[in-house]
Amino acid sequence: MAAWGKFVYAIVSTAGSYPVSANAYSSSMGVGYCDIAITQLCGYSCGFSSNDIDFTTAELPATCGEKINFTNKLITCENSLTKWKWKFPGAVPSESSDANPVNIHYPNSGIYLVTLIVSTPCGDDSITKEISISGPILKNETGIKEQKCDGLIIDAGNIGGTYNWSTGEHTQSIIASKSGAYSVTVTKDFFCVRTDTIQVPDQDGGNMLFIPNSFTPNNDGLNDVFLPTGTDISEFNMKIYTRWGQLIFESKSATNGWDGFVEGKRAQNDVYVCRIHYVSLCTDTEERDIISHVLVDK
Image (tube, rainbow, N blue to C red):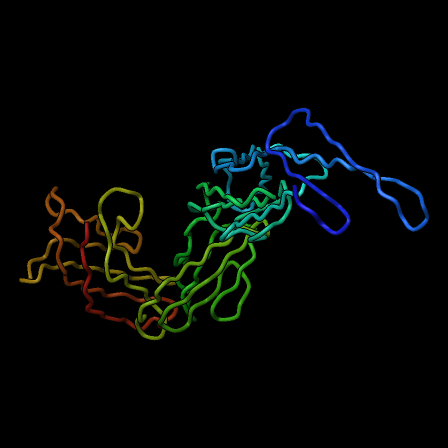
C-alpha cells in the first residue's frame, strides 16, 4: 500500500478478488466519510517481458507507397495507464504514440525495423521486428532513346510519374546537348521514389552520331548489340578490328550492329577498334570518318 495525498492506493499484478477495509474519520464538519475508488489496470502483469508484447499488420508484404496499419496484441483496459511509442525508421510518419497506428507508408523498398515500446506502471519493455517492403513500382528505365541533331534524347521511362531532372526540367524526356552526368528523380503515386543517373559521352561533330563505348553481348536483352545511332543517316559503313588490326565485322546499314560474335563464336572480353564512315542530315551531306573504341564486357 502507498499513500498519495489523501488517497491510499495499491497495484495488483493479477486479476481476482481482494478485500478492502476502510476506517471512517471525522472532519471539521463532524461528518465521517470515506471514498473508495477501484481502478482496473489490466492487460499486463508486473514483471512482464517482451514475450507479452507483439504486433501484427494485415498488409504485409507491402509495396512502396502502400498504407500499412499496425495492431498491437497487448490487451489493455479502456482507461489503462499504458503508453505506446512506435518507431518506423524510413517511413512516413516515422513515429507514433497511438496504440494502433494507421496509414504508415514507406517511399522505398527494402528491409525496415519497426519498434514498439510499451510503458506501464510495472515498467517498460519493447519489441523490434523486421518488415519487408517490395518494389519499388518504379524501374531503372533511364536511357538514351534517340539521337537528334541538337543532342541525345534521354528518357526516364516510368510513364505517368513526376520527373525532376538535374537540369531543372520536369518532362519524361529531355535533350542532352552536352556530355556529362544527367540524373532524374521520378515520383509516382505520391510516395514511390526512384533516382537514376545516366552518363552521356562525347558525341561526334556536335551531337551528330552517338557511339557507345561498351556493350555486353550476353543475351540478357540489355545492351547486347553495338550500334552507333544518329539522325537521318543516308550513308553508313562500320568496321570492327582487333587490337592487332584484324577485320572481324563490317556493316553497311545503320540498323545492323555487331552482336559480339566472330565467326560464330563470342568475342573475347577486350577493347576493339571501330571505324565508321557516314553521312547524315546533321552533317549537311558532308562525309564523316570516325575512329573509336568499344569494350566487349560479357
